[in-house]
Image 1 (cartoon, rainbow over the protein chains, first blue to last red):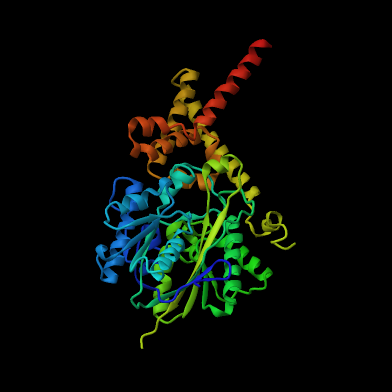
Image 2 (cartoon, chains in turn yellow, brown):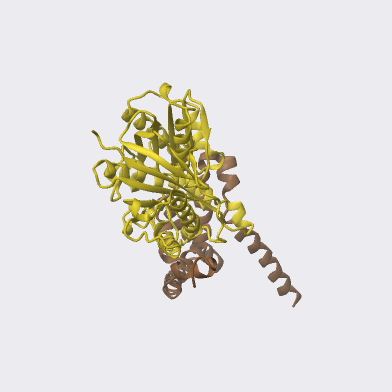
Length: 336
Length: 142
């Protein structure tokens, strides 16, 4: 049985064989700016519209990933992708260029680990020899869909986050690679009753805490089994809350916890509480964290991508914001 | 109070508070300062033109400046700092139309620019007209 406990999948032999990342100008200028494969110094990424720019990023990330994995798209059996836009236009329009079976996924900003976990399960179950998981977000496309026109003068609160412009892709397969995907905990939708769309950290922290607790419970593990427990985009507000929630449950993560949204930008860059968006967890994990792992900085990490299942229409109808978080365990494979 | 017992209440101590005093002061001085500039301009213009024309000239200048600043991507940064000091003036309304028009240029000049231009400013327009109508009614019934 590969289901362990209530929500956790344990995989036998699944590896991340290669990754690819593409980012926009602000991310390239950030503290981990040199970890990314493709860098665009223009927010339009050489395209005519913001939506096309986001597609360009996803295409670049996939191309870089395939190149690093030394495979062609014809050798990929399944493409899993998602983004933040209505009808998942980035993923669907990107996929139309590829002659590969395609599953489109939406988990808001949790999509990076959702696609990775499902991709790993398909590979482990023998439904695909190689699967490609890709996610993207773009600051301008997200702003205009979820908030206001980009140039509108509204004062944002300190709890607001800044959507990451970028895309990340991972090639998953059975052939031995440098990183092994050993387990995944699929989250439940948790609604803590938060209604402020400019404070997604508070909305998502309970979902992240729930998934992490369930993960420990299912696998009989504790925080000390991990060199790093990293959340997707809880930012400055939510990351403090999740630590407190876990502490209340008896899990002390103060020494090995971090958040992708805090790693990607310099605090003084006007990014408010930190980065968010589908690409936040994807580019930080596939770009920066796996490089750290390869360099020997850690052996086992739990990546928990957090998604605020936010809809502007639901917010206007005074509904609260449901959230979800999916965790994936990635372990280093050291050469013999 | 534990977070998991009453999350919505307990989480408040982790959420950053808006700086009401600083924001009010900034809005007062920046919004007020801009209004003083408008008043000075109006006084200047009145030397050469009728009173009503002078007022309209000032409005035209402020609207044009806001649209230009929006187009070059400066107005939103100014608003992040000035807050209400920049949004309650007519410049804020101009910015709301210009930013929506810019944003939706990619969907064409009819459906995009024209169709979406009032998506933010439209509410102010509707209730502005309704309020003007009501106050007008009160004024004439007195």
